[in-house]
Picture (cartoon, rainbow, N blue to C red):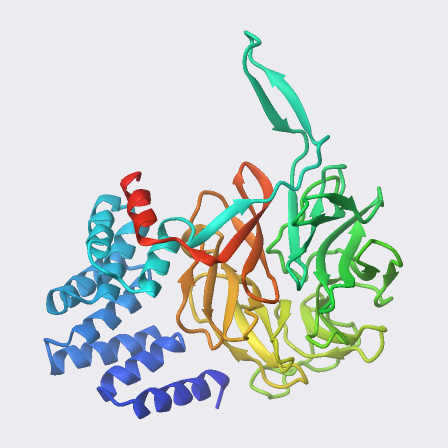
Length: 470
């Protein structure tokens, strides 16, 4: 029996224990594990048993929405709305389908209907994330005072300020929320910088003309930073969602004090080691690395030993002590596994893994074992990061062909979009108290760093004004 079967059984038993229509519960369990064909069969059977079953129509619409079948999804949601016109989640779902398939006028009718009442906070949050930012966002001015040049119009009576350099990216916020570490190629190669989020003073941490430094990560006590260094790529920003083992990079993980001193390699081996993240106790670091050439067997996620690795360039997840000893490989796959993140309790590590040609999010016990798939969608997901209480995961998704930030429960359910602003959004990093989220985005032309205040969700009146301007 494979992992997906066990997941289906556990979800079904949990849902069935809560009561309700067994046919519907089976369909929901199938949908949670990505078996859309079986889910459709169950929901259609529930409708046949009871044509007035609004929930069955709603769930059927969710399946077709996942399959990006706008016609079938909107038909199902409209049927559900006729049977249960006061259910806000149905109205939102119908508007969402219209929105994603460029029927904006029809979408706005549904959204305005929602806002004319008193929708719950979670509905407002979903609507806000669908149409813009779910929480208040501000751009962090990470450029120094000398990073601008003055320009004038031909008449000489209007002055503008244009950033001379290009991209700031790869942000990390310190556990106490006071510091921001980030990479910038303003000097034609990627260097690391540290900014005081109170005074906005800026300090350059690395000074290596022939090397790129990026992917900084703070230790839990905020005193150290792990980061990645590799040969420069000619001043170009490194792709923030790339997790390809075919990349010939020879990246290496380094450690340094928060002021940039005492820089030293964490591990001295050939290959690519990237995406470091500290364990909650600060004693270990998880990272992605190419599988060693001497790896003899591939242990699949089902726990069965299969054929020897055919491709030694795939990325795997490793854990190592901060003194560079006791390196342990956690994943053993012939596909890429990358971007690990540690759960606050130190017991689980979430990561991104390729399934077919799509990246999904998995979790694995920090001590090793069988990985559990958390997402089952047609979109790729990257950069998972746990919330401070471990109950949620924030991640990047390319759903609807846009790189946006999302949030879901730690078990993969209850997905909520956090950004749908112009441009792409990458590399989320949370403060320990869960109140501040930094990320990189090119919403202002170049890649810059932004701060999302998770204590300030967009309110109903703000949403009304936003929709009125669309």
